[in-house]
Amino acid sequence: MASRETNTSFGEAIVSMSTQTSLRVEGRTDTGIGILLSGGIAGLVAAAVMAPVWIYFRPFIVTNAAAALYNLQGSLMGWVVHLVHGTVFGVLFAFLVTKSPLGTKVGGVSRSVASGMAYSLVLWVVGAGIVLPLGLMISDVPAAPLVPNLHPSGLLAHLVYGAVLGLLVPPLLSATGKMS
Image (cartoon, rainbow, N blue to C red; front, side, top):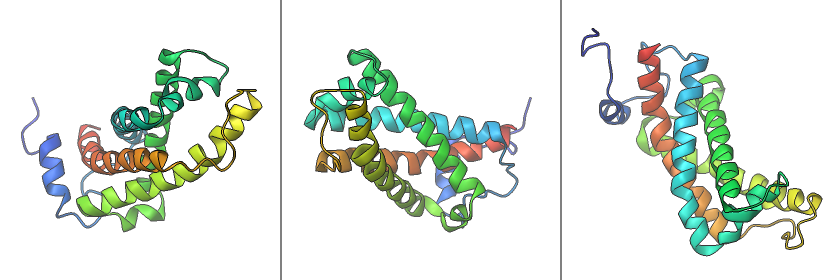
């Protein structure tokens, strides 16, 4: 049985994050599985939290457009695609903050959330603004929006995604690093 000293609870990781100077938590090894789990879980949760914001303003995006990118149909498939995208982009964010020079600039809760929001801003411009409408055009979706598709509701939804991602990734990285 592991002692309390070697295991960091999720709540303790959030509290201790406010005093950290970097996401590179001392004593934690950034294993690939830790990054995958941390980013994947945070990305999935963040995508689930962002979806109602987007659905409120533009239900077509999550329920139909995401599925149409892959020539799929139906609201369920739209949700699945949206959550998979959120998970993949969460893993990419976790990788960036642990393995790139960008990670040394992220420290504390406010900086981590701000970094997540900056990351989500890029996702909004590139993903929702350019890739989504181009993909829908290529898939011959009749209601495909024009490029760039920078609707303010998409910005709001992506900023919510980034804030949740920035809040969750560091404590999850800390927890998974302690487990490895």
